Picture (cartoon, rainbow, N blue to C red):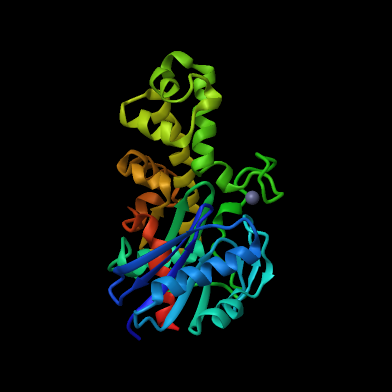
Length: 313
Ligand SMILES: [Zn+2]
């Protein structure tokens, strides 16, 4: 199979792209994400038809945030779109006349990085995506590990703090409450409240109040050396690295790949993650260490990965 189409469903836009066998995106189309579940289905079909017109694309891979069933056909549950047992594969196939594979978006991104990004040269890779929340994907022996029911790799809701912070999932103390873009902002606001004199750069980037601090402000302030912003990244990294040490106990991968918006800061966040990972790795002085690598494909990983999974059939 030559060209395939990958689809990335974001909160504000739906992107479809024609992708070749090397993971290069040849053409893209975008539409705004409609507010209704039925609207999203139509918008996906429209984006695929627009970008597929005149190309020789033969199949479609869709990355969707949520639980996707073991047949890669039905979105069982999506947190941000009101999809409950949504038969997405069938609905899109009826509209675009191509075979469709549906995959969890973090799994698709992990596959994209494994095939065409930071995972080069590895067969056993575990990815975490530090975005608003924390997503995950597992590649073992060169295959995407989906679990019996299709929902493996949902690391964000591993409970790392008994009776910890409330999570949107209904549980408490979930990992993503401590290691995610949202957690980073919380750390910065807490620190700016406690020590405003140390957070002048950070506060000026927002509206002057701790509540006005957003993720992009923390990144910009950290690059300017703001101590509160840097410390906020370190706190996030401490939790992220400790969690990777636990994942090493589970999977023993050759590499961890850290993606998502937070990883755009590169070594500013990756180095403290590596340090925390080594600190918490059991038997750290007496065993080989997995590499902790920054993702390379950025926001393209999900689309490229979904397209490649469609190619694999
Ligand atoms: Zn949770």
